[in-house]
Amino acid sequence: MNIGELLRSFPELTVTGVTQGAIYALVALGYTLVYGVLRLINFAHSEVFMVGTFAALFTWGLFGLDSNTERPSIGVALLAILAAIVVAAVTSAAVALLIEVTAYRPLRHRNAPPLAFLITAIGASFVLMEVAGSLTVRRPFGVPALLPSKPLFDIGGWAVTPTQVTTVVVAIAMLVGLDYFVQKTRAGRGIRAVAQDPNTAALMGVNKSRVIALVFILGGLMAGVAAVFNDIKTGSTKFNVGFLLGLKAFSAAVLGGIGNLRGAALGGLLLGLIENYASALFGSNWRDFVAFVALIALLMFRPTGLLGESLGRARA
Amino acid sequence: MLLEIDNITLLYGRIQALHGVSLNVGQGEVVALIGANGAGKTTIMRAISGIRPVASGKITFNGEDITKVRADLRVIRGISQSPEGRGVFPGMTVQENLDMGAYTRRDTKEIAADLERVYGLFPRLKERRKQAGGTMSGGEQQMLAVGRALMSRPKLLLLDEPSMGLAPLLIQQIFEIITEISKQGTTILVVEQNAQQALSRADRAYVMETGRIVKEGNGPALLDDPAVREAYLGAA
Image (cartoon, rainbow over all chains, first blue to last red; front, side, top):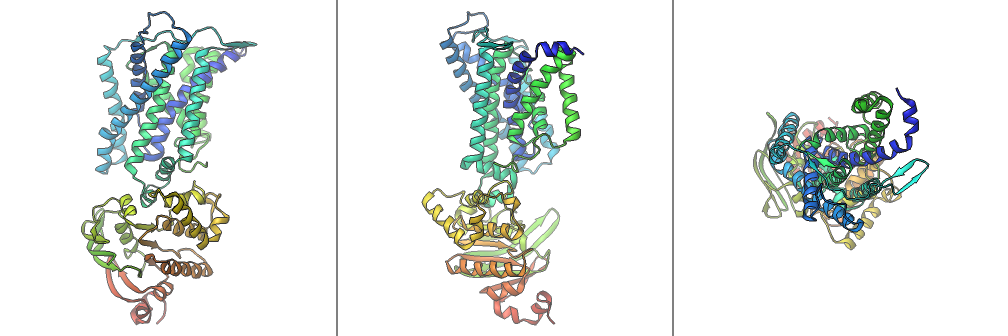
């Protein structure tokens, strides 16, 4: 154990942890939204994220930016990021909707048992991953340099780069926007109604199929935004980039209380922090190990996660 | 007839819950459906609102065949239900629950007027408008479920056991409100275990036993029927 390292690097670890946590949180929302309405773990959500990372790369290609080009001016960089957010979010949402319509909806119409959905989810995940793998000849793709790497500010060791600021600010904006949408709009009320009591929701005139499609779209939008910032943060992407990240984001959703939107955000943030502190304490090889041990330990004491309640029961 | 049910059967898995049930509800009527636990009363309600598909038979509403119409679309056609067990959304406030009742409507001004009408019928709901539905008492949840069902401005209001679990004074009160709703022009089909109240307030009534209609007649007449009195009113 290296407590000295943890104390010395505490500010930096916190900043990187929060940034990583913001990405986990955005992806975790997709798991939690779908779970809240369908009681289904959509394992294919990791691939929704993966497609987003390539959609962002494609967008930057349109700007003439690739891993070999010079860093563009800050204005061009921000414009390229904004464009990538839009393209990746829309693409990921489209893929999420495609999964729902082609994989899950037919099962629902046949009243398939829950296990059939689970196997289908895993199957859809592998299909998408392998298709992406063969299209990209399973090689990694570098991400263009966009934002300056020089810290934006540095107060007593708390150095924060433009990338980290942008990631966290956009993630917070998305979280607040989603929370508002679910709590305050008519469509959001429909989502909560189906999550709380699907039969009564139908008696109110809520079209369940439409609500289900909507949660897949919302989850996809969030995952697409996360994908853009994961590209920028890690500097590359690959056909299997969604696998471990998806697993972590799902864990974050469980950590916060699956089905609970604010829980997913909190779980993501905590997981990001735990990972970074753990890699300082025990070495980076132990990062994932410690993160999952922490998850299991927490679930022993709080089996329903930190915030516990489902999307439906969570109070406004 | 506003609602015509013609010879419907319904299955829960392999168990047949309804064996060829036919019943009618005319425009402006209050019709009661009574019978013991498990007789199939709630199942009929679910078939009418479209929550459970029927295996055979036909349901006609307002002259149109709605047998295959999805539940949410039946709401738009004018069928509204206060379900068994109330179905109050526990995580939504009273106000949000009532807004859910008007989910299919876009006429904001009219919705606001109907909200005031419901608050007029149930002043208690107005006092508690910001409270979460799940934290209300059984009687308050019942009022909320009935009020919410009115918010879609239904042509036909289905009430499933509105008196369930309520204190006698509240039962009296909720039936007075049902009569009031009927006077305001809404057609009502009410399922009840409290046969005394239901029969004395209904224009007509049906008696169910094990998935079949065994008797029908006007409310007060059934109230005097010796067999009905013995089976459902605890009198010899």
